[in-house]
Image 1 (spheres, rainbow, N blue to C red):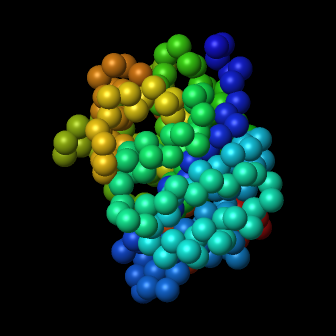
Image 2 (cartoon, rainbow, N blue to C red; image 1 turned 135 degrees about the horizontal axis):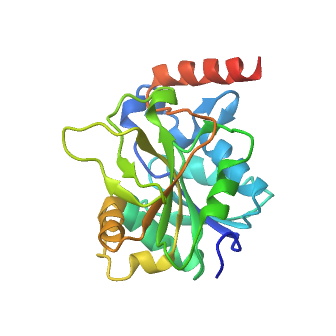
Length: 244
């Protein structure tokens, strides 16, 4: 499969989390349905997926699951498949692994419903990812935001990125300019040999780093990290500024 030739038709959106940092808003509204700029967070991501040609989208549900399920099933631009975690949260890795039967045997997009939100640059960031994907070299490709330009993010960054896009973890007590922006292309083979039950995707990212098969692509535009109620205000301000 040549570089830039493949276009994922399937996607997974993680929408099962408890949204504790968003309290009190999440007492009655699951975090994916909290509105920013007049649209639920999860719809910002689903709109991007639909624009890039995704036809099937799996969505996992747990907290206030009925509300999330009813909301996403209103979509008419893609087939929605619900991955039910009402009986127990499976964390990011376990949640995606459970949904793999709905995602086919080809690389697929994966978005976090709460952090995969940004103001686009000249070209859509998901298109950048499609063009950067190289099946021969990669098991996972992550969208990375420059923390210095991010809105609502105060962490130390997640990865160091080589010139060819290869990723390694940020060293302890150091700061790196790149944070994972909650969007990825993942190949199902990444999950081979993974544990059953709940586990974090960080386990598989570390496995891919060891194999030299975790890569990143730098986001264009501005990442809007909507982690707290205060961050909603910042994000809405940033969008208004960008449109002015």
